[in-house]
Length: 246
Length: 371
Image (cartoon, rainbow over the protein chains, first blue to last red):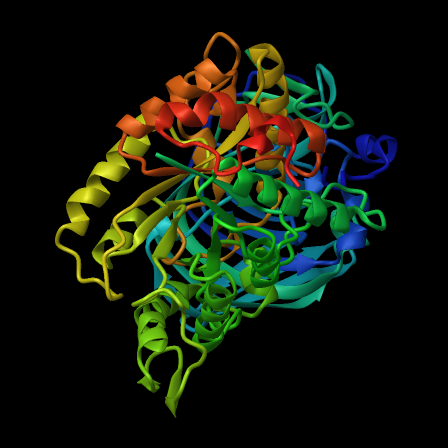
């Protein structure tokens, strides 16, 4: 069997957001700018970054995802996620290490309804003809700056988005919450990617080390955060430990 | 209907000293038995870096060992990866021709382009280009085998005139196939006059029947890349045959599901590399997308797992769906004891294969009296 994660759960659980209910209504966010960049990361460190219900992809991957929307039912959203590519059983997922969300209302909704571990900060997405740049700041300064360069247009079907598993404290206890937003692309580009600055500790995991850039995409898309359907016990490898939400 | 075996050479963790050798030794023993029992063909994959799932990165060497220890069974590259960063086309032509000589004309040449970032990224290949390079390779390989001297000016490679040697025993050249994992690839095989080497597990018989029919229609108007049209549809399945259907279900499903689980750990190109070139996410998502009927024993309707009667029924259905051959994965990561794998093969040869007109060339092998 693959090597499952060894994340020390008690510490991670203490930092997990609290979800008072699992009865979450879908949320449609229209015309969001969505930037996604993939990198390979150090394999040894990755194992200690994942809970024992999950195992890393081969090779281990880092997914940086940023989203900006001017308005939505929960107000404007500017967020940047740091995620580790993983498998929950055979299901492709990304384990959310942490998300910096600029707006307090959006952060509160994302954490309480979908289990996003939201941290305060700033997120700026700059889309230019020759590059798209994402700059993320926290209390102590800039914590992430990455770019998509030389954009080339893509068809909507060419881009793939993986869903999240978010560690959260739920009414059933600490669980991995499966969140697989539906992303309907209006237009998209892809390009090479580069990280200029990354402080993974600011997102909650100082061990992540990007070793090899893969590719990035930027899209204008309608994003639906879904009703929740599936949870996993974070310390039980699937298919055991899977819980359905009726 | 013909039957074959398909080797991924999956290796269980922990990777203790000797475990890879055990996997290879067991596979070679299975190959020898398959030959004695009347299986028509064996295939070996080419995969790189796919820990646990497949430790078969040099199939030409494994296949040579198989050829040297068998007499009748055909030996297939399932597949030779037609991407420059994996192999120059000249090297594929040379390797396959050499094995054709050593095996005395028993080689089958499957072609494909790889689907994982694990492999493509590791070898520095450009996912946008693999379809084009595969297409170029399948067009030049027959020329390399048949022409006394060969030169080329193309997209993925160019070369001055050279004698590409040795030449294969089979004339005009060995049969060529395409690995069909993405919907529509069977039509690309048909357009080129190539065999459809189905390597997608778990699809329903109805879906495969539709694909096979489309392939057969399309190949009637093909522009063959080789010297002949190889109109054949191969399918892939798991084999576990046992008199006790419940035991067969438990054991067969266990290793089949483990195979899917290990395969799902690999990173498909689509998941990290946005491109028009890869529109499928890989094996597991494709399987999950299809509703599969499960019988009263808990076995998916299309799976070749069960007692002999069930297997005959399932394979008859595959046969009526237009499938010419089924290749079987026999084990995953040593999760089934080798003796049970061999017993399963023998029972299959004794009770199932005769129903399809296949009889062992060495009957004593059925009783476990093979050399």
